Structure formats: structure tokens, C-alpha cells
Amino acid sequence: MSKRKETTPAPEPLEEYIKVVLVYWHVERRSVCIYSQLKSCTSSEVAAMLEGVLRHCTDMTIKHQMNDSHGQSEIGFAFSHLLGFRLLPRLKPIHSQRLALVEAGTQDTYPHLKEVLGKAINWEAIRQQYDMLVKYATALKTGTADADALLRRFTRSNLQHPTYQALHELGRVIKTIFLCDYLSDPRLRQEIQEALNVIEQWNSVNGFIFSARGGELLSNRPEDQEMAVLSLHLIQVSLALINTLLLQDVLAEETWKTPMKAEEWRGLTPLFYQHVNPYGRFSLDMTQRLPLSLTKIA
Image (tube, rainbow, N blue to C red; front, top):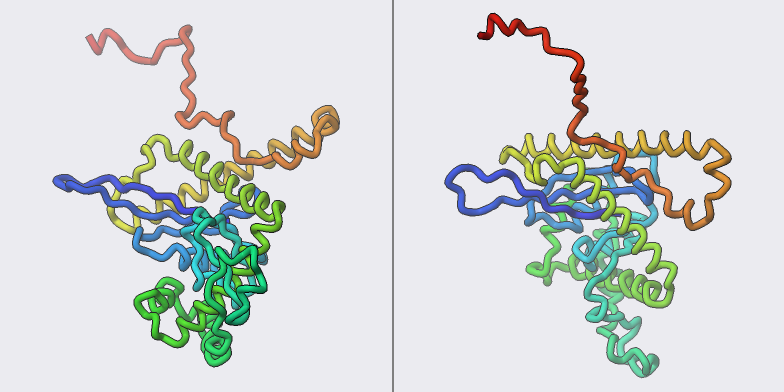
């Protein structure tokens, strides 16, 4: 699962505009962030999605990737299929999506879907460029090509590129399959919604941890910004670990474990912070005085 969050660096003196950067999180199904990225707002979110899946440096095998509308495109669907995982976005403009036809002239075969049918798939374009598709997917997987740089080559301004056309057509195929599954399977829709709710909860905890700064990065230097984001990532993961250990200790007692129902087990999460004091602790003992010589001060 992935989610973006916009963070504002502190403006320099005499600036009349606010600089904004993008923080892209990859969070597993329950709570643990496995990858974080600091990106510019002009960066491709599809590229950030692909980079997190490929570079997360854990032992996890990612089979599904959930994200919102910004992290998907036909090119993203194509590369996700070539790289062996399934892209499952929550599409906000679901009403404007179109289903691709397998063959031209078959609209009458689906009379109830005429309003949402698009053009037929150009299978020949995929067939001719198949070797190039595998080449680019391999370059992404091995790290010999940067996802951002590669996707900049395959944009709508480069429509005549034969490999772009093949990727676009393959993406339409995979996206159509996803749309059919998404519209016909309420469990899939629920799974995607639940996964993205975890991201919203993750961002809520981040806001609590980062509250003293008001969500602002206090430097315009990219190195300092990345350090702040990685530190936030580390604190967040540490909090999830401590909360997991606390939950284990509590549920080890039968008096707490036995009353738990299936719905409560499903909703169990280590992303809570009501017990955390972000401001530190100050002990005040009115019976003791500071070891100061008041006569010398006078």
C-alpha cells in the first residue's frame, strides 16, 4: 500500500511562495512502513509506486499494491504486470473509466455495457514490442534504470514511440481486467478501502509525532529534509514495535484474550498513541528546593 503526503518546508526570508515536497510511504497491510521517499511535487507518483515495490529491502514478496488514483496509469498497470505484482488502485473518477474491447466490432456482444466500452486493444503493437517491454521491465527490476527517468520517456507527449504504444495497450488490458474485478467483487473493494484506511491512520500518527513542527520541514536543503523524513519513519516504526509488544503482553492474559471477538481481532492495530506524551515529563516536588544560594543571588 502506498500513500503520498505533502509536507511544507519552512520558507526562507523574503520568499512570497511556499515550497512543497512530496513524501511517499509504502506501508504493509497492518502498520509497518517498509519504504519512504522524499520527492518533488513534479515527480511521477507511478514511478514512486514502482520504486517502493522494487527497493523496499525487506524479505517480503509484494503481490498486491494498493494506492489512490494518483499512483496509477495505463503505463503503471503495464509495468506492474510485467514485474509480477497486481496494481489495485482506489479510482476516484470511476465513473469516467472505459473497458477495452478484445476485438474491434464486438460492441453489440455487450449491449448493457455500450456506454462504458472503449476502443479495441491493439494486440499487434504488444506483440511487436514484447522484447522491448521485457527489456525495460528488467532494467527497472535490476536497478539499471531509474523509474522516474524511465517513465518520463513514456508520457503522452511521446505518443508515437512504439514502445509507449505497446505499454499503453498492455496497460489497457490489465486495467480492464482490474475494473471488471473491482466492479463485480465487493470483497475486493472492501480490501482496497481497508488497506488505504491503514495509510490514513499512519498519516494521523505521523501528524502526532511531527506536531511540534506543525508538519513543516525546517530546512530547504534536500539532505536535511530527507534526514527528517527518515527520522520520522524510524520513530513511527519504533512506536509500532513497542505497541505490538504491549498488545502481546495484554493479550497473553486469558481475561483479556477470551472476550475478543472476530471483529475486534480484525480491527487490532499497533497504530495508537493515546498513551504517549510527546512533550516529555517534568517532575515537580514542592517539598524540595533547588540547591541555590539565595544570598549570593541577592
